Amino acid sequence: MMPLPALDSQRRATLGRALNLALDKRRQSVAQFPDWEAMRQRAHDIRAGAVERLDEYLDQFERAATANGIRVVRVATAEEACRYVAAIAKRLGVTTAVKAKSMVTEEIHLNHALEAEGIRAMETDLGEYIAQLCGQPPFHLTAPIVHLSRDEVGRILADKLGVPFTNDPTRLTLIARDVMRREFLTARLGISGANFCVAESGSLMLVTNEGNGRMCTTLPAKDGPRVHVAITGIEKVVPTLKDAAHLLRLLARSGSGMRLTAYTTLINGPRKRAGGDESTGPDEVHVLLLDNGRRSMLRDPHLREALYCIRCGACSNVCPVYHRAGGHAYQSVYNGPIGSVWSPALWNTERAATLPFASSLCGACADICPVKIDIHHALLWQRKLAADRGRVPLWQRLAWRAWRIGMSWPALYRFGSAAARKLVGPAVLNRLAKPWTATRDLPPLAAKTFRELWKEHPAE
Image (tube, rainbow, N blue to C red; front, side, top):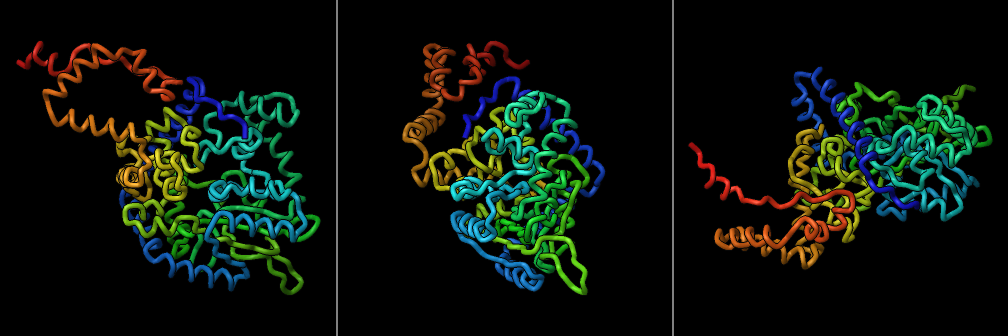
């Protein structure tokens, strides 16, 4: 993987413009619904009902999907899922697979696992494809290269593909399409995620804006059977198609302000051959229902709501920390506020344990969430778990204990505040706060406290 570029002022400005545009479009889209809060509540209730009765709906989905001709497999770990996909590729004798955008496959590091087996998984979402060319993970849940400018994208394609430089969006898209089209027509293995799994019909719902999802999953291959493997978390199940349709109304509007994604695909099974006629679609469909830590979240009443997430990315769009730090700063597949809840639940690492602390707890994420997840309280709970498990460094625990003592004794607080202003200058603060200050300077301490100013200018 290439070193991740620092989020310098230019890249931060690009990110800010893109996120603010998405928020503006969302506000306009939401304003069309006077009952938006009622729609959010219904979405919350749908997701809550599905998660509370998860095993029942998973069983129903498996029965219906199996009746449709889909092979449903429940996998407990990332390694198990990767082995299954690699085994299918080896059975088909393929060395290349085409892949639609999928955060779950990023979660299990499927591309790297297949590469170790000599199989190249080519991303076909334009943003994911460019990120793959750079050797970088996605920057955002729904917009993988939201931090890159048109010029940067043009230089990446020129460097990696040997094409003339252009920064025209249409030309850039056509360049990528020419490369992908050849892969679509020859690949015999297509991989995707699933936005929703509909229990009543055994259907997979896949939403994209570029049509690449359909090209990966339903386009017949020229040189043999096409196999579609969908990998999705167990929490993506919803009871009915009507429920999925309601969630779909909130998904695009919340993430980007669009009324609906350009392509909404329902996959009900492999293509059927009857009466001499052949339907479109893959010859085989496999659905992997992945746990990988989700059941532990289900058992924790403080984290269960995080399973309601529909991956719209709105919480990142509104988060002041994400605006400032960017997606790569989280060093996790799932970034932003909801990612800071998910990551410690999925990965028991020191790095993941620190993510819940990268939040101002302003509550903007909970206010914008289309399914009303109480994100900031889940972040607080993850902070408590990190402290209970010894994941908080000793110096931080001592520092917070000293802060608590100081805040409890007014005289001690006043003495410490006066001493800090006299002894700690901007240079010392910046050294103490590394690496945070690698891209920013901390403001100097105020010359006078509010109490001192109040005494000088008493209220009249």
